[in-house]
Amino acid sequence: MTPSQIRDAVRTLQAQGKSLREISRVLELSRNTVRRIVRPDDPARSEDACPGVPRAYLKSAFERAQGNVVRVAELLAAEYELTVSYSTLTRWVREAGLRAPPPRAGQYFFAPGEEMQHDTSPHRVTLGDKTVTAQCAGLVLAYSRRLFIRYSPRFTRFEAKEFLLEAVRFMDGACPQCIIDNTSVMLAAGAGADAVIAPEMAAFARTLGFEFRAHRVNHPDRKGRIERNFFFVETNFLPGRRFTDFDDLNRQALAWCQEVANARPKRSLGMSPETAYVLEKPYLRALPAVLPPVYEVFERVVDLNGYVSLEVNRYSVPERLVGQAVTVYKYPARVDIHHRHRVVATHLRLIGQRDARSTDAAHHPTPVRASRTPALEAQLRDDSPELEAYVRALKQRGQGRGARALRRLLELQRTYPGEAFLAAVRQAAHYGLYDLGRLEKLILREVAGNFFALNDALDDDA
Image 1 (tube, rainbow, N blue to C red):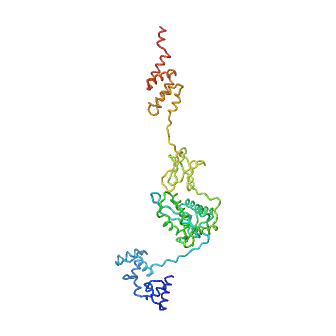
Image 2 (image 1 turned 90 degrees about the vertical axis):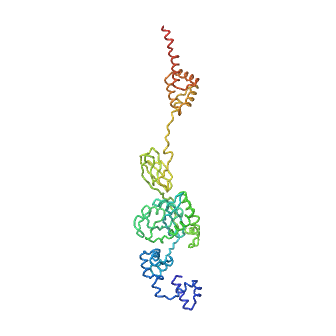
Image 3 (image 1 turned 120 degrees about the horizontal axis):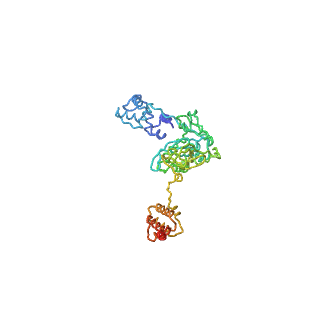
């Protein structure tokens, strides 16, 4: 019963001669409540809202506090030295007629498959060792209350398309209309009945089989099905949970929707949303055989480090494209980079990060200075095993890879006759001489003795 009906019932029983105890027992009210109702109105008492405080002062304090009852209590304590509890003060304000009672809440009834509702809400979530603000997007079927939520670092039209596509896949169908608020993400102009849906969002919704409809301004009760669920998410899903990244957050959110939100019976339904969904599913519009892709296209120029920038992050491309223009395709989970209509790089999309880099090792190979030692050894190869053994020993005793010593040895081989060179190498190896200056002297001695024979020629002339 309403308060007015309770007062009428009390006074009727009093007129019938019932005692306070009987009235209290019949109507299940306390005796103090019954006494307050049957007490005759005192004009002197009605002039004062509370003991020692005139109604005129209470009205003045309420106006100065701009309707803030907590501030009214502070004024009473400062000016009248009167401490009043918040509940008592709000009752005095109501009895004085300073605050109108809240309007009666209405109720909406929906047929199966008639409507779905969508909204977003910022939530504080813990990702790793940081607490960040994430945008929670939700969609609910108005009849069955089946819920789907998804988180993202921000909520633009790209994230809106991604969410709506995942939501209708989860519902395996769509209602003909989706109620939204007057957000600029969906609207191009206007509000309420005069709202103009953004052409790209209207076309995307039409492809999925529904259309958007904005409720009038300051009327969130029109989409109360989803508004209430956000409170449920904040008080049931988020407390006590930690997440590694947005992928982990959305995996747990999906599991929570399936195992808790949609599996728990609701008193207003008399069943769980999942059970009611079975009744609503035949009335949903079927999804098209081919769902529209969600992507955005950007033109970029590869910087001097071999990266392109996208959403304050950087993605590598082959270094041969430095300074050239490329086309970047952003998908929900990956980034494709095209050059002259060919894919030159593919990366996992960096979500919820700033100033991060995604580098493919094949794009930026580490410069390695080619060693010339194997080539020098190949040129020094000979059928003589003594030369091969001398080369190995020379490398072991040389600095670094021994390239300088091998290069000098190759010059000696090319400069002097082969027989004299090999004979000097055998002699040097026999005595353990690996100083190439001394090796050259041995070669010159062999050349002078075997090829020129200067002393014999002088004797013949004499």
